Length: 228
Length: 404
Image (cartoon, rainbow over all chains, first blue to last red; front, top):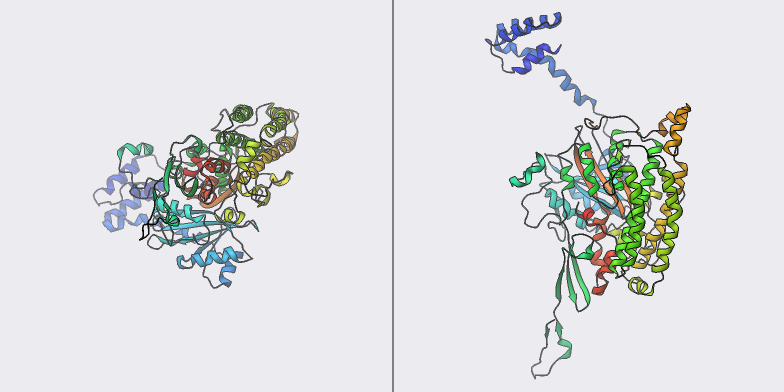
């Protein structure tokens, strides 16, 4: 069925004088009857007015619109999400990741206190911070915290969206965060407020820009061999 | 060192007012015993270290950025260099993360092959640590012994993968090729021979009075402080914390294998040495059991089973690839996960986000050395300067893994 759509794709802004010619090209090819019928319709429509020529584009819309319908129900809070809710926090549950770990979104202003609860509460005891990772979602930056418990051997994932590229530092909770947050600042430019020594760690101290951001561009031509 | 002597108003020298200035000594980036390119800014008060600041990043090769400009399959050969002494672990976390996202099944034979190779790799890594650590302390000969035996394992890896260090052997859902014929026998022969070599090492080192003087009571690591700093692996276990992901969060088939987790008591350099030596023996135990338990056994036996028309030989457990996929055009579904394993240095993790394209949206490496190195200022606080190399060597830091 795509024949007529293809012609439409090639000439998105069809003018009345050009469409008949495209229709002739269609008709001259050995095409199935159905396609010929449709191309004839296109011809007729385009002769009427230029606005009508855009009509055949309409059938293309439904497959695009179907995609968002597949969304599942909003995930319910897991074990540690409920623990935080019981302590007066407002985490947004994000379901489980592909490894089966519970994920939740925290408000930046609640992050540090929620981490303290998760570290000290006997039900969670997340005393080891595995890593702090930054993620650039193009619209916003995100900090991802993977926690581990050396008592219960469980893991949990916390996420927090940076507001104006700022997040509270969790160094008072885990000293591991010292270097990990410096790395995230270095590569993503997320400023961790309250960090004792926030400076570049992997890149040279005079580096300009934050290299892991998606919109980062290498200005030095000698360095772009990688993208060839 | 400059000294300033103060006088009071009557011109009498006041002894208690004598001040000494701290001396700042820069070590590195190119220092032979830093095991890589690491710069340490030390503040000394006489022989005592008052403060030490590690400067890292000299080996930063932007491994995480590289993942965003290549397809996952193109990126895979480059991840050997994240931690080059135990590349199988790098590959395992990377491949395993994607297997979780794409829900690829992994045959049991592959799990066992991965387990054997990873444990052999742990031995090579500990052997290299053993050699270079003794070199740090001034003993040259143990290094030659250690490299002699490391070479035997590297030869096994060369038979298996064609490479001595950069293996690139695992694939999504399997391994690239089955074991060479007779390879398991070679591994078995190695596990028979190696305990005697370990006894030799222990005979010349473990009771050596110079070695004991340099290590016992040096570099005490408080277990709670270690967890605060995210220190993992043998360095943490030497302080008495029983945390080994092979036991606590079993991956591969470690739950089917019997082994012990060696623990230290005092948390000093000597305990860290003992734990690593004991870990090599435990790794041998794991390898011995895995070689006996591997489904299908040696490739020659497996071929015989197939030739005899045995149905079991064609079951999923006996394959080397779970699902045949075209790696070059493979598009993993959307998803994210983090896999952590117990590498020779601690928690090695790979956090992966995919967005439905052949490239990964984000790959984050969590190196064990990165967190382990951050405890160095605490360990060196108030210690003697000559102990620096003894302490730094004992936490077994690999700089390429720190900088990635």
